[in-house]
Image (cartoon, rainbow, N blue to C red; front, side):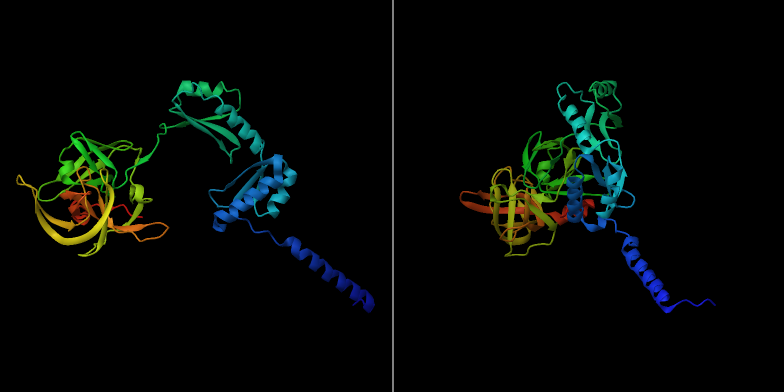
Length: 364
């Protein structure tokens, strides 16, 4: 055994401890921000890095496999800074500003753009500007090539169209008249608009405020007063909402719990818009004349007029601000009086049509 002076041993031990002390922080890996951090934390990190990197920033995105935040840069020497901020660096050819300039060039050439060009955008992960062309149409490809800027042309199946919503209480137009939307529902394969049966018995193609919805699928009147319109156009969405017109923002359907006698309800329709009242009777048989007898209706003192038929009856929303959640009750069937002097209005309970046709109500 070789003996060393105690002082030498002490120095060596102290040096080893110092090495350990300085090595520990350097070896600790910085945790990587991911989707689990939440939108606010990710947005803050992206904004901070974008500002810090300046002209060499090349975009940011979440890795679709790991969910980790990736930040692009055109300067490899900035990779350490990106890692220290909790992101994964990726060295790319084009800066975000360069890609935006290419996109702006295309934005300035919209006059005469072929309908087959569905749009263009910056693809951050691939560091390219992409032009989407329906079916690879030659005219669309030629337009992209003539821009004089580097782009990637991708083929898409169909052109985009504006989407519009079918909302309870808004207009529903048949070839022989106008009614109102009740509620939206769906089954395993399709979406439907529910309204009054004396409206759907008109049959044929049905339109809404934004265009064609589809065709009458099923109808039951008299005896009952409900029917469905099958949604066949891809630009139609069917949210769980009812229009309150000038009385406030749309209410959202939470369920279909029944309001009992004496309870407050409100209805919406294209003629008289939003009116409220109370339930006066359940399961009533109503004679509309000419042999048109309907059973199982609910009687209310909420007024309605022609054109409001089929429109939504819901539980009365709570007062105050914030999102209003309500319970779907039924579709306006008929009544007497008007909204100037008041009147009696009946609605067809929505649960009956849901059960009859095995449909699920669109809910918030």
